Length: 84
Image (cartoon, rainbow, N blue to C red):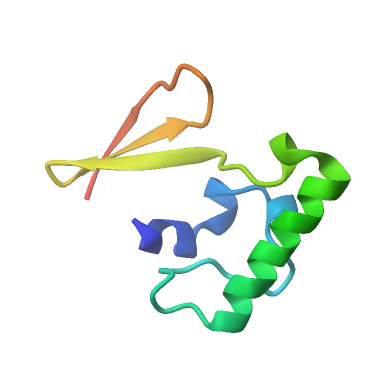
């Protein structure tokens, strides 16, 4: 799952939610400094833009039986199927 986000970050997350120079990847392999910078950016956005606009995904994916389902980040998701 993290590979999908890392390879196409702007497909999953609006750029305003990620500090410049940070590429999201599997948290187990991200550098400590990058994770701290991301959370500081989110915390600053909570103050300047409200909690609702501090961070958010455009879409999310779910793997079921080796098939990825991409859902828009809306209250009523409509799945899009993609075989992996």
